[in-house]
Image (cartoon, rainbow, N blue to C red; front, side, top):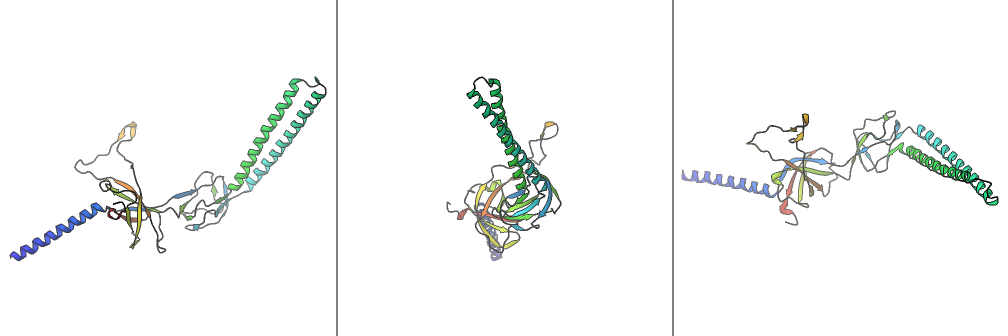
Length: 292
């Protein structure tokens, strides 16, 4: 009987020790399974309005930086450029005419003083100044028309992946309205949301082990690159009638808030393709940090 009690006590001691060691390991190496894969999302946005005359990509395709993605019907902008060039030529001709008249009047006044009045001389010079201004405006309009024609060809700003493409030839696009998302392939990171009680001791440069839910057998290594300084709160925000919005809660339950910790991966195997929004778990290995 005594041996049975001793054996039971030994098992309890071992269990308590294992739990204590596990808890201490958690304190030394915070872990969360509330993590997501993130990346910079570039909104491909046209600068001109018009129907698409060509779509050169497919949904969920990879594109290179500078690759031609879409073409907006260029005909209206070619016409606008032709008109702007014509206006520029007219403004140039008007300036030449005003300059010639001003030059002749000044030459005549020098040969025969008093032939041309001071008022006329001033008017000729004012006409030249106005013609100069009109030419500048016409040149700016021509340059703007030229840019608008260039903007009918929409290129990729970064190398990455096109996703959620729902456009086709003939679709009307509007200037400054996003068309499709481009995920920058060089910007992927993992963002883990750690309890505020786990943030103590986490520093920039700490090593992190990341396990993607889709690839549990291939843990990845990275470093902490940033720790969030704030999160949005519902309590205290302005509600109806400009009064503070306060949610009811249980006084004996205080849930720890979660703060984002950004982890940059060191390397990525060829067999893994990161996808924005997918789930991961992150463990901060403070004991392995070079500065520890």
